[in-house]
Image (cartoon, rainbow, N blue to C red; front, side, top):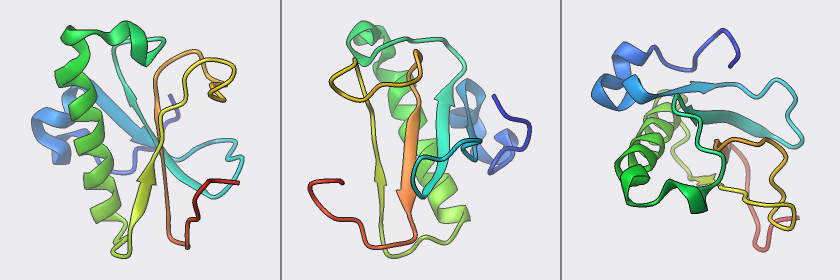
Length: 107
C-alpha cells in the first residue's frame, strides 16, 4: 500500500484497524482514493459470511474519507471482480470516486 493515508487510522477508530485508505498511485480516471482491507481477500465472492463485517468496515472508512475530503455533493464506491468485471488488482479494494458529476452507466 502507498505511504500517505487519507486519514490516520487512529481517526477511523475501530473501522480503521482493519483497512487503510490511500490515493491511487496510477489513477485511470479521476479516482480519488482506494480503501483496502489489511486481510488479503482476493475476490468478493470468496469473502463469505466471515468477510461481512470487514467489508462493512471498508465502506465506513471510505465514507469517513469522503467526509474528511468535504465531498458533500456525492460519491461512488466501486467493487470490481473478475476479468469481465474489470478487476485489475488481484485483491479486494474499494475505489472511491467523487468531486465531479458521475453518470450512469459509467464510461
